[in-house]
Image (tube, helix red, strand yellow):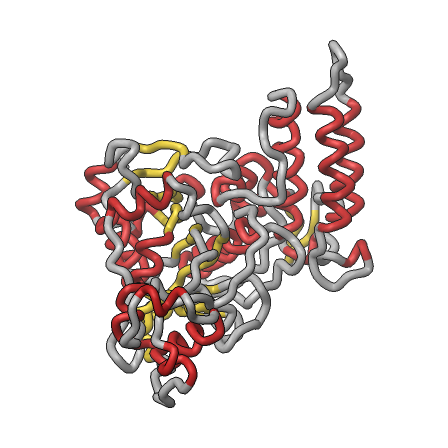
Length: 398
């Protein structure tokens, strides 16, 4: 989830006359909630490539809330501090032949829990405050840290000392704050490991799910993206079963840490994500491909806006997903927290998904993403294995 994304609702098909004077129709979606599971407050990752971290901690906060009824605000900067050191060590061990970047995966958060524990937000400086900011800002931080790690990893020395870790830890602590060895929370003293053990969840309950055909179904493999540097395994299931797992989870009170591609035209800054069918929109607009190609992007956007929730969608297939993964269309752009289902006034169903960009957009930090969009653009997701339908769990031997 490493990309710098530009999300604009752009070029789809229409006739020139239709685009110039779009019909004024009330097709903006009006949502009715079908199922909504509890989530914690909206956070803001700000200028940091840490959606993987914010979304997965949000997921675990909901897991804890479901298991114990208690609300926690877990510390993203603790995860960053531990994770970036681990990732730097891998790059140095590989003599630079590994990526060191801001991004990451669900596995990074789970591995940090297991290896180091976690602390509440208040046990470390609030994100950005050590730099005089009110939110996380990794621009200067990574501009200082990346060359440092590169210099060690690509050194031509026959032997390097262990002091590079001391220096790197200094950079991490200067920008993120030191990870506490002990802290007091609600009158009780903890270490990060005793704190994670007190949260009421079983860390062995969490699995990652994906759906591709370049590996056998009902086996586990590491999804081949750079930010999966820990080589975390995902269980591979047919795409319809992938969707059945999400639906079963939400229906039974669970949530999902979702990772996928949001660079598509249908993902907007207004809180919607729709898998637009270009050909279907062109046909509805009474246009042909030749006329469409001559049309300005702003005019095409008018057509989309006019169609609103009635805009036709792609019907995703297994083959389509595989082709998009292999040709780099489907990438690991962003992590979000899926927690509910709603429908619009035309009966189309959407997943309710919590983002980490603050209370932005029409729905104050929540995105409504159609089931077709999720089916088409999911890279992988983390879920409690107890949320998986029994017949699928049996096939996966979990």
